[in-house]
Amino acid sequence: MTIAQPSETERRFVLKPKQRAFVESSAQYSFYVGGIGAGKTYAGAVRSIIFALAHDGSLGLIGAPTYTMLRDITQRTFFSLLPRAAIRSYNRNDQHLVLANGSEILFRSMDQPDRSRGINIAWFWLDEAPLCGYYAWQILKGRLRQQGYPTAGWATGTPHGKDGYWRDFEGKPQPGHRLFRASTLENASNLPPGYVESLGYTGAFYEQEVLGLFTAFEGLVYTFESDPNAPASHVRATPEGKRFTQVVGGVDWGYTNPAVALVFGLDGDERAWQLAEFYQRRASLEEDVIPAIIQFTRDYGVTDWYCGPDEPEHIDQLNRALDGAMLDSRARPADNRIVAGIQTVSSVLALRGDGTRGLYVDPSCVNTIAEYGSYQYATKEADQRNADEKPLKQNDHALDATRYALHTALTRLHTGAVAYASAHSITDPAAHMIARAAEKQPDAFHPDDDDASRQHQADLARMLRRLQRGGDFGFTPRE
Image (cartoon, rainbow, N blue to C red; front, side, top):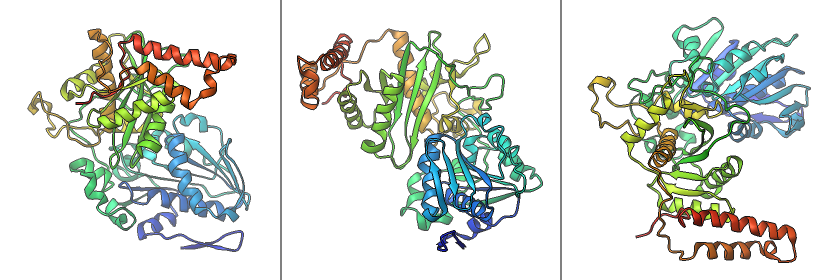
């Protein structure tokens, strides 16, 4: 397919048959659903570009579940396809794009859909729409009222259970709604060799993540209310000014499968609030995962990171990065008892006597919320399941990180455990850190510089606090 641009150049979009059918659809509401890597975002971006360029002066909105996903996935694809000649201006702070023909596009995170009320648009595109939530789709449908233009809304994404999207597009199709489906296998030519096989997905999870089918998962591990409008929902934004007695993190290492880092605040009632998530496939440890953890540590004051114990070298590397950033935080191997950990998480998810939950998840943590709806046992019926049965090892990355963080932190809290003993080869950790800090920041140790002296004293105070907690610098013991 080729379209003419304002610069009288041509841009050729290479589309597979199902992508082309979706892009050219005349239905007012369209959903291109498919497995991971099925070219969904590409198709959504192409349709957005064509619509905006075909309707001079129109206003459209492109949304994604979180700002990080919007920036790293949706916008990256969109701007790679949009010719520079088609751009008049782009305000990064306002996330406002003006095209050469006068059309405008707003880029918005859907973690709080109500913020999009009040605008009048001609079109919208929701990328990874099921993670945005059905409520976001409903809100934006009500914004399609820009006068003088045809209106349309389209969505792309991998399904997550039989939700409102399933009902409107497949279960009980609504007028003006059309579904397009493509599996991961259909886009194999654009994926690494052996990609699907390397995922190791089976059963209902394979049907969802590879075939792009709406699947009702049975035998779920946790009872989780994901509807943010339900009275006893687990999805709730952290109240402004909320104070915590401790902030901890959980890390599940991965590369082909997602690498995950989660942040939890524990309040005085031993209630946990999930504050943030990093969730990324094929993430580099040095370039993606560790920098994200360092930033979370700074932003939220995380004191302890409980990590999957299967990668002790990663834990050591993270601790070196935390020390290098002069952060008073440690990475530790988590308590990896699966059955006991599931019991701990189940107990905090349960409804309390006062009608509140012991665990709330921020709406921005969309991947964690999605996993609660598909993490399952092989044995579907609870009364036929052995007490020691473990869940299927798939779609568990955020929930493993949750178990690492909450089970380890709460167990230590209840047992009054002190910091783990360290058998790292460094014999004098305080002296080592001072020497390293002086080497990396020599100006911070100049005796005649008051600002530098204060920095020096702050660094020493952090080191002292670590030593007072048992001399543990969080390194994984060596044999």
